[in-house]
Length: 310
Ligand SMILES: C[S@@+](CC[C@H](N)C(=O)[O-])C[C@H]1O[C@@H](n2cnc3c(N)ncnc32)[C@H](O)[C@@H]1O
Image (cartoon, rainbow, N blue to C red; front, side):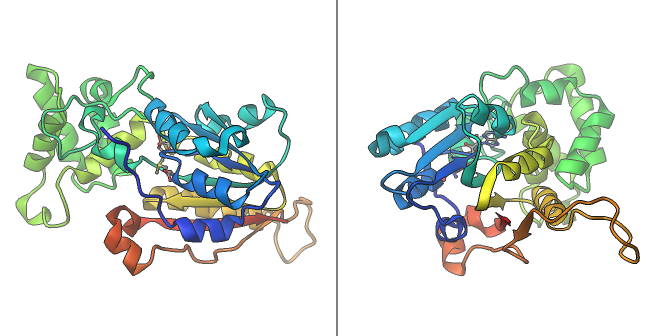
């Protein structure tokens, strides 16, 4: 299958990041290399890029896409949460900008073999970004307790019917393991009362929740943002695109904390000594234009936040 992914808010991200000749940039979520390509182009002729992704197929596609920039980029198959090590191993101490375009790519979602999609009926449940990891949606669905399933569905999917779905998963797997995306999708369908099925596909929230849990997408995201921010040079910017409220809440909270680290009672002199390290450029998140939303439905729920190192 051809790797297809349209980079979201490309123009807005580059306006935020402002790549320059001579700069060093980090793309934590390389994907098909759409944002990376533009960073390398705008930082020509000597700007450098270091990029990570957990997905070998994304790395293959991006390597091909970026090949015209030759020695100006390094791709590392890694979680961006290992950012500090990735930089240290290459003796890089400061960067001029970074981007995180969170979640999964269209390629991952659309490729039936990856088991992310509730649209593909007979695909094995998988949803791993890193196909080498030993824990997939199959293990989660067939091994987790009803309480754990309920927690995941309600926390990561904000699914109102988490309880029904979790109970029906456990009931269904008593006879035989739940193997395919179609089987899980049917369980969701029968767990949600008819009148509540108007707001999108009945399995949408469940699949989102399981994907987030399998890939531990939210665990340690806050620490990764602090880490990346800590290595920005003065004036360097961190640009983050999120696709659901849980991610956005984390980004918003961390940016806020960086901008206002002192939590001392304002009526008295500060005793913590913490000073502002950065300023959020986007007081409100930037969203995709109407035109972009029409051309790329994925961009509809995207939110872009930018912070600058002081
Ligand atoms: C939305 S896509 C990025 C698309 C990319 N910006 C482009 O323009 O082509 C997200 C990518 O980030 C990867 N990813 C998600 N979380 C990651 C993490 N914690 N560490 C490394 N890669 C991650 C996914 O495997 C996926 O390829």
